[in-house]
Image (cartoon, rainbow, N blue to C red; front, top):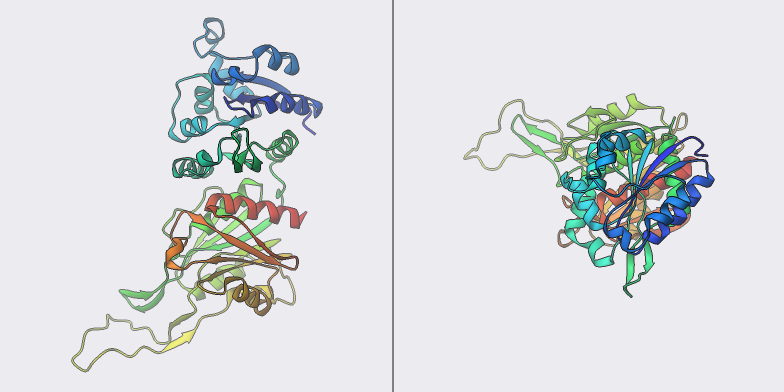
Length: 397
């Protein structure tokens, strides 16, 4: 599966470093050539001798090694590999990566590389859930860093929760996916995102508080798995992801037209918060205050973009995913919406003001499908997107 592929494996300093030895063995079983790089802290858990014996390669440890650096070793190592894997990726290593620090061999390699990087985070649950770590994770994913894990379970410190490094076999699968351009290679996927702005007059409009962050993260995650993504976005607060086809719109009518123009696709994800109504007769001039009283606005219903695609008789995408932002009876209302719209999945979340989800950096969703309702714990929107993308890849496979 990995025959002839060159993996640069950076082993961070955490208790999960012992798994990196098994990871070396499993990567080599798949035909990969593995070059280990040990941080100073990792040598508290694994020895250079064991890493060298299992990899059958020289182990690199010191940025200031005269022999290695005479040949610009850190530059050559960083660019000779097909993929750089960081396992375990400690909170410290993630922070260095996110902030561009380069004060040892591992961090210098990561800053000097022009190759893809896959990290397998591992740390105490409190460290993983700390806002600083989650901010760093979001930065790394926005930079295109691939992430596998962490898993949830018992930890060496006696606590339970997310923070365990992915098992070596899962990391090998993630490596294989990264090196074959991802499991969604060759698939065309449509993603809508952001709010729509419905004009009242030239200076006023109706909108909602959607930032577009979740839809943008989903598009980025799908692209990272190799999909050809068409990203139809309203006027969002966040910048669109790189590497996708971006179609910018303002209104629901414009979004519907852009969606229709993007078809056919293998899957469609409707994450946009489309305004339900528009002003029936928007004014061409600014509406002025009047002693006659308040202006009277008559509303018309906007097109139902999700339903129009989900209920197509011909050319329907193989998978249609909708979103349901609710403030009460979340699962019940979202389930009813799925039945009414005719989509395959509905991803529901509670956007009540006290949750801070709409416009925030985190989300807590429930995926409703024929299999029932699967509620996920609260996590960053980037993590939610990665899980959604992985499930879409599995469904399309």
